[in-house]
Amino acid sequence: QVQLVESGGGLVQAGKSLSLSCSASKRTFSSHAMGWFRQAPGKEREFVAAIAWNAINTAYQDSLKDRFTISRDNTKNMVSLEIHSLKPEDTAIYYCAADRIPIRKDVSRTSADYDYWGQGTQVTVSS
Image (cartoon, rainbow, N blue to C red; front, side, top):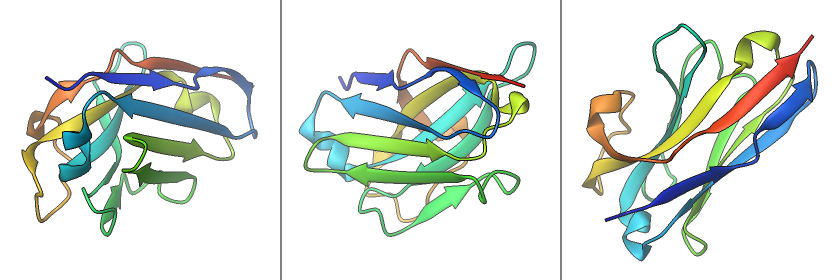
């Protein structure tokens, strides 16, 4: 079983940047696409970004792609999410997740395609 642990969240002023990290417990991590999702208070969980197992392909929520950057380091079993020009509406719990299918050709934006989830890290953006 893969364990995912997010870190890097916190209270940040609007306009600043933040980097979130997700550490995976197994080397098999390197064979799976990874995704970031977020859930704001009172809202459903939404897709943020995903990166293929080999980092060749990435996908972003269209409204976020100009400010969010996903990356991974398979040698360290880590995936990161950089957020720039933070806005109050970015306030949410951010979750990383591992794709259920190894070496998936396409990067999925669907949460149902991810079967391992971290506990989440809270990001709060003050105006």
